[in-house]
Image (cartoon, rainbow, N blue to C red; front, side, top):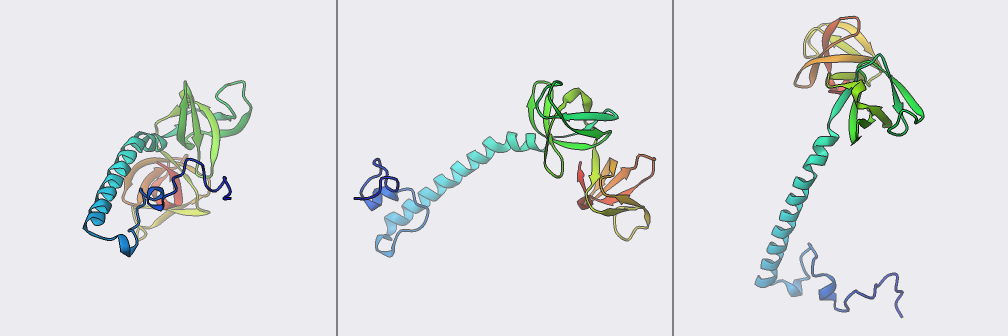
Length: 189
């Protein structure tokens, strides 16, 4: 007697009925003009379903790409969306965050390392910033390695993003110094 955990009672006994939705071609003995046409139909139905799935996910993907930055000099990141909740982190002005969820006036956020917690939305801004993720990054006079290095940025330094050109971002440091940094050396927008 077969183990019922492997073979549910609702499963048909015919191999053909068990595999009616397979995407792989049938054994050679089944290949014919009708089965090739059937496979073509199945594949076109699969592509249509996959396309609809991507369209349905588009708002979620777009929302996941939303960024904010810290507006105040220091803002608490909380465990839950409430001022009574425990403070997990304190973040400084300009720190970039990716929004993963909204609940009322609260944003669930993450940074380049992981999920952080909740911040009160009025304490954030839509001002683009980057945090340097590399150990150090060269701040250059123009968007490319051929340009002169004007300073060195340290890991976790937050810079204001002014504009982007290809793989480079023009940024301003807290002290007002401006230059270009490779976007791959930081995280944010």
